[in-house]
Image (cartoon, rainbow, N blue to C red; front, side, top):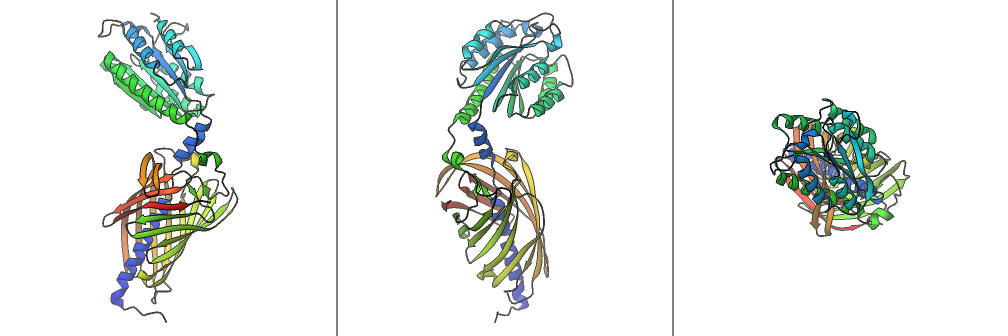
Amino acid sequence: MAPTTSPQRRWPIYLAIGCAVIFICVCAASVAAAAYSYVRSQRAAAAQPTIEYILDASPRMQMASESGDTRLVVARGVLADIVRTADPRLTAGLRVFGTGAEARGCEDTDLVVPFATANQDEIESGLGGVDSSPQSDSPVAEAMISAIKDMASTDGPHSIVVVTGGADSCNPESGALIQQEAERAGIEMKLFVIGFEVPPDEVEAVRALVDLVPGATYLNAPNPASLRQRLTEIQTEVNRRAAEAFEEPSDVSVTHVAETACDHPYLPMRSGASWTYATTEGTLAWTIGDAGGSTESASAVMEVGFPGGSMATHWTCTPAGIVSYDFGSISAGGIGGLVAMDVTDSSGVWLPAVELLTPGYSWTNNYTTTISAPGVGIEIEMTSTTDETLTVVGTETVSVPAGTFEALRIDSSLVSSISGMMVAVPGITSNSSYWFVEGIGIVRYVYRGEDFSGGGDLTAYSVP
């Protein structure tokens, strides 16, 4: 016979169940993995890192720089020096505007050095021949749009580096046109615009143009020294991105073939897979007892063992990602017996399709859970509502007992409320961070709330 429970002891039971729900929510959120690194490695395998330099040669660049030479002469020399430091594996080209190559001033832009690899000498030579046309306009935006079109046929990552002496003189709505062309091309692109000795009354106009373009950065260079510094920083970043793209994909990236839709590169839910964590609550163990289906529709059952109890989580997966999950029952001595949980309503996606998961991308995962306790000896019926927002942060180096890894970090903001019976606990908030490694899964997680905090580190894993 199940033990009876006095009214005085009911509140601790309710609280324990509530804490169990929060704990499971936190664990579930931790698996909301970031596949940004997966996307990056897939692109890298077929990448053709490309950079296009754009130089302003419009009449304003004939004004004297503080060095005594014209701004164009200074910019040509500094850019030539920086180009020599470019990774020779880059595909690079040089575009100019304002030279008089086109009769119509607002269309006056020209690709003077076509794309090729290891062509730093050609770009340096091409820069030496750039001169201004006294009749030209300053079509900054037209040059950027042309550069995007130049790159549209190549796989990323792409970089455009612009050195301009002022604002666009042709179209005050030019930022929107650049944005439209970037969206139409659909390429991975970073745009760097350096304002070299731009007059104060034009700085905001250039900045406003750049702010309209996704992935664009404006940098002010009020003198030759700062121009060199800005270009050096940009070229270093471009070289780094190129080196990452040319890295040999890991064995996991090459050999990973999904068995089912639940077999995600950053959470390979395959039958027999297991993970063990040292946590602030003790040892936590995840084991995939059963995973089946196809790459179109699949499911997996994860057995979760935690100090004093265990539970099962049922996952549903499609090409859209890991779309939903449902809890089974919790068996835990701390709550006196068996507790059943059932997800009755949900919206959003637990883990979206991998192509969406890039730094800065956010999504929601909301669900309602009913909780009952047939094994506790009293009648308990409660409801937990959880609203969660997750955001991809990026990659970080993480050291845990299982090793040192380059891991993807995702942050979560979660709000839960519990109601029913004698309990009404609104607005339980927590913030969490999770680190995932390709082919392994989560290697570290931390969570914190108003009156609680914790986390865990991976100690061992096995992925068949």
